[in-house]
Length: 369
Ligand SMILES: C[S@@+](CC[C@H](N)C(=O)[O-])C[C@H]1O[C@@H](n2cnc3c(N)ncnc32)[C@H](O)[C@@H]1O
Image (cartoon, rainbow, N blue to C red; front, side, top):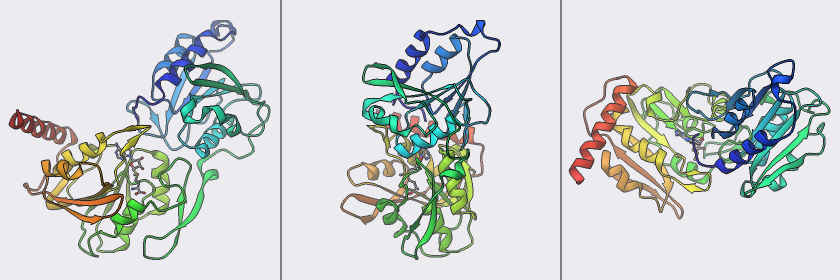
């Protein structure tokens, strides 16, 4: 995901990479290779390239123009750099993957900001590493470095990080697969449960899109109701999508981050959309979803979404959809629905759909001015 989160940490890591002592790569027998894991900011990659490294960038979140998969590429790297992720479990997972990609004696770096937990992150390094040390502390950010002494204890691969826990959305408990860093790890989110409770009755859903599907809970509840329609699961996090593919094998997984990734039309779009990005409060994704939904909904098709009560979702929905209503009201969340009232869309290429969405936005701006 592109975000301003971590820019400072990336700058500090870049400074460390530029200023650390060591032989210039030109004096070694081969071009050194560095693997960067999960950093959307360009600074460190640029610093390493300037220093003569061949840099491979890997992300689990869809990031335009970059390698985005559920697990980092195999290979032997001379060093690995891990951007501090959001959860400690994910940090442990990524550091294990990093340790499997260097030889004994090679360094692994973990960098991040104090408010992201970097100060206590030493404990996430796997056994088999020398004691990690802070190599640079600056602007409330740290670069921790540890050298691999032995292979990491767990074998390499996402499967080794599978966590199964029971979830129940009202139809009985089932074993659900989670991986570190997915939404609502090991549990059912209360907002998701509220939305599932307001799904249309069996047979009334047709072709369905679960937008921001996470581990696939909402899509699974739709499929379980029957009716024979297709369910598509759209999700930018390749790790979440891998969990969803295991949890809901009957659905169509789509690695994407907006509606241009899917082919409509859909009778129903369901979503517990992402609202928070890092610490910033952002409505960007939900705004885009609501703006573009009419392009992929059938006439009369419904967008059903759950969001925090205080968010202006009703106002946003009323800009592009009709028959907007609150269908569930909880202390913290509301489930909203809106219907597409325009002509049914054809299955048009995403570029044209984007064009249509832009034209609609421009018309709406002209009307308001
Ligand atoms: C609140 S979680 C809901 C997950 C799942 N539907 C559930 O209810 O358990 C939002 C999900 O949206 C995903 N997401 C983030 N940015 C997105 C984007 N631009 N487009 C679609 N999904 C996105 C996140 O990775 C996350 O899995």
